[in-house]
Amino acid sequence: MAEDRSGDVIVVGSGVIGLTTAFVLAGSGRRVRIWTREPAERTTSAVAGALWWPYAVEPQDLARAWALHSLSVYEELAERPDETGVRMVEGVMGGALLDEQGAWAAARLPGLRASTAQEYAGPGLWARLPLIDMPVHLGWLRTRFLRAGGVVEARTVTDLAEARAEAGTVVNCTGIGARELVGDAAVRAVRGQLVVVENPGVRTWVVSTDAVAGTTTYLFPQPGGLVLGGTTEADSWSLTADPSVAAGIVERCAVLRPEVAGARVIGHRVGLRPVRSAVRLERDASAGGAGGGVLVHNYGHGGAGVTVAWGCAEVVLGLVP
Image 1 (cartoon, rainbow, N blue to C red):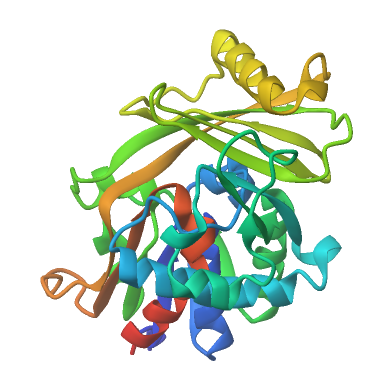
Image 2 (cartoon, helix red, strand yellow):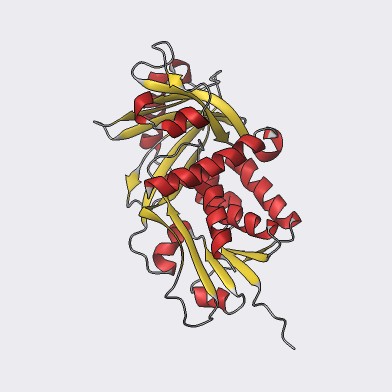
């Protein structure tokens, strides 16, 4: 007799969204498998900076709720930074104003204040936020998922019917891959390039947006080096680092922190953010065809996947039988 798989869950994708979702589902007692074309360390998530901040993700009200739930989780994980990769680090969000943040910011971010002229040349906010070392965090998520009884399988999925034939519930966490996998033309690649240098002593992070030039410049001190960014190149699919772009990133970062000029380059990172006009987080009511069962979508988080991952995973938990 064939084994009954109707109670199984298959999560397709192993970036931060897929891993977090799978971990939360496995923690609830469900039998969960991850199908992934590539290991977590080779996903876009592994390339991320990655600073918690609810920005550039829609729908705004829901995304804020997802972000605040994730913040609570990260605050707890930051008590074990070496294990989880999460640290609470202070820095400046350049261009942000206190009176534009809403009541949630003052309530949830103790010490939030306007930055001083010594901290940042212009208006900005001084905040203490989660800064995540993504390779470590993804490894921690995978280990915890496996300990919870989960299974990771190397599978290249070209049709979700493959997964639906083997499990009663399938959760689509394929990020940029959803554009082809489910034919969602609303998903666009926004290329991000980073440079990692030896840290010359920078201990706080800084994010600076130039609306005129259309650039966002940031420095994130991570245990393995200082991460410098970045780019937002819409509809660019190249995963090859551009030397001239890298030089421009270092130059912009050196304006903010002069000690960065001349720092030895350790490496380059390139990733494709899965940007969508709004996150698709829903149970697919039209998925009653081949395979049957339940299909849930959880993709289109753009550059905010880390920020909303845990909140979105909780929503998925409520959508899965």
